[in-house]
Length: 143
Ligand SMILES: [Zn+2]
Ligand SMILES: [Zn+2]
Image 1 (cartoon, rainbow, N blue to C red):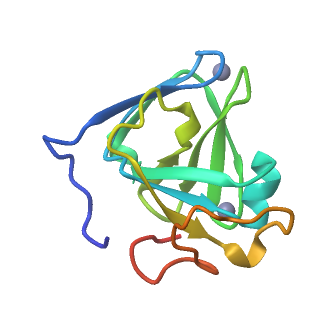
Image 2 (cartoon, rainbow, N blue to C red):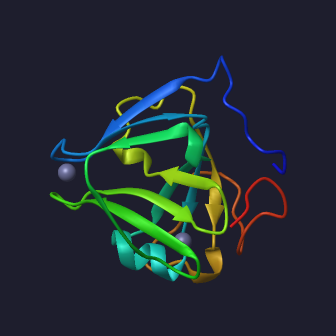
């Protein structure tokens, strides 16, 4: 992290869409999935959030999405028609995350770990063996 991402020739292209198909997207640079267990993400999703990050210049969105406040400087976006959760972005950064349930293919994308365990729900356990962080890891992911 730290270095500004550049569109790489070899980066694979991923496609995704919402439940009804009114919104679709193309993204490059998707590689890591992080699971967020914070209060806002749990309220929003009904469980916890999966997010796969890239930079805004590597994501193109077709169709109407509705952005809404998430927490702090972050927002999430849904399809304006069917309400599928599709994107999450922190407005203080140039990054944007797609919610990987909307991906047609997840080739080359791997799960990295769990964040915000300090606000995790008490009704479930995490037993996938991935790294867990009270908030965020010191390196490798910025808020
Ligand atoms: Zn839709
Ligand atoms: Zn969260």
